[in-house]
Image (cartoon, rainbow, N blue to C red):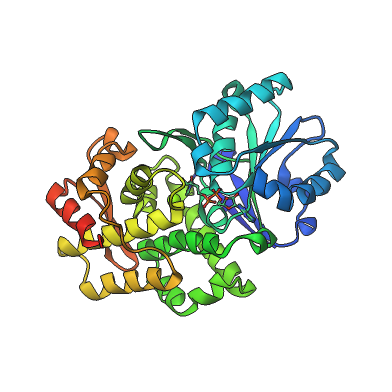
Length: 361
Ligand code: NAD
Ligand code: MG
């Protein structure tokens, strides 16, 4: 078992990385017997893992309430938040009640958001079950839901009390979900770590096939990076913004194609490719590195193209509604080289349109 830490003063918390839930010390759940606890998951994960978790936790904490939501990105919306809150109010949940998010990024984002606004904020614990949520979304306290006008438009920063990664959960994931998580893994490597990128070029298929040592290496590497960044820049002033590589384009793709049409990771993959083209067209990124990025994503089995069914302009329109634009100018994270990214603003619309067109087939 490995323990990492997000350091945020009195809001610091551990990230526990292990396999076999039974071996993870229950004290990491930071629950007291007097607390009311609700485990929130979705229909799919409920069938696979809920009983296992409930059995493990109820031995120590007694009764745990369960709430099973519908499965899908399209349910990451305010209606679901209201539904969860109504149930908590009916059950008389108080300020010291605790929520447990058992699921991928969708469940984690919804539960974190509910926890942040219920009675002005209660505790929650992340028990991420997808590769993507184990390496990214469960850490850092970004919570929220989508609006028809844009991804994650309604949300808050609200840190969990702990993040518990059980690698066993990954065993039931469809292959496509491991691929999807790999988009965020490649993102970390492009932003921060050329050696990790090279490691991925050589070992991506081991990770995709859930080779234990490689998966653990990969998860630890990403969690270490994320924990360090969040510890230094919780509210995304500068450093944390780098993690948005591929996301301004990616969110526009998710909004344009409809939530759930592509997975988040698939959209981010194409977003990374478009950002790399933008950087290439501006003369920052060398062509050879652009091609290595595309090649790695393609080899993983992630999309690197968009269809011509939507125009480049329609993606740009979505980008102009992105959070990062609403609060200022359009800023893009661009790779200068593999392992080094920077924030750029005031990029010509023509370059953005040309970059999007570069991936259209
Ligand atoms: P997801 O939560 O939709 O999970 C993907 C699918 O896998 C779902 O159908 C889910 O039911 C299923 N599933 C989950 N665990 C499983 C398991 N162990 N076995 C079998 N099936 C399982 O998607 P995701 O990729 O985990 O997360 C994407 C979401 O995360 C997006 O909404 C994105 O915006 C958000 N996100 C948030 C942050 C953040 O910092 N808060 C960061 C990155 C992404
Ligand atoms: Mg993401």
